[in-house]
Image (cartoon, rainbow, N blue to C red; front, side, top):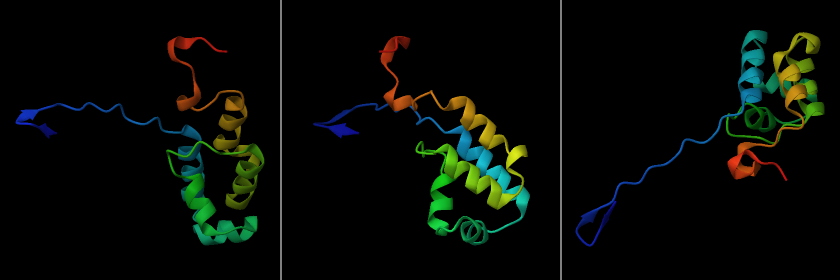
Length: 103
C-alpha cells in the first residue's frame, strides 16, 4: 500500500475455517453423489449445499447438517454431525470475546 511516497505493510490474519464444513465436504465426496442429488434428497437447492461446505460459513444448524448427512449416506456415521453436536455451544471466532473471558 502506498501513501504519499511511503510504503505501508498491511498484515491480515487469516479467517477461521469451520471444521464442520470440511467434514460435510468429506462426507459428500465419499458418497459419490452430486450436490444436485443431495439437494434433491434434502428437498432444497444445490446452492444450500455449496453454502454448507463453504469453509468460512458458520451458520450450520444441527437439523440441516443431519438432513445433509442423511442425504449423503448414513447419518449415524457422519463425523460432521458428531462435530457439530460437540460445537453447539461454541460461538464462531468472530463472536468470541477477546482475552478468553466469556460474558
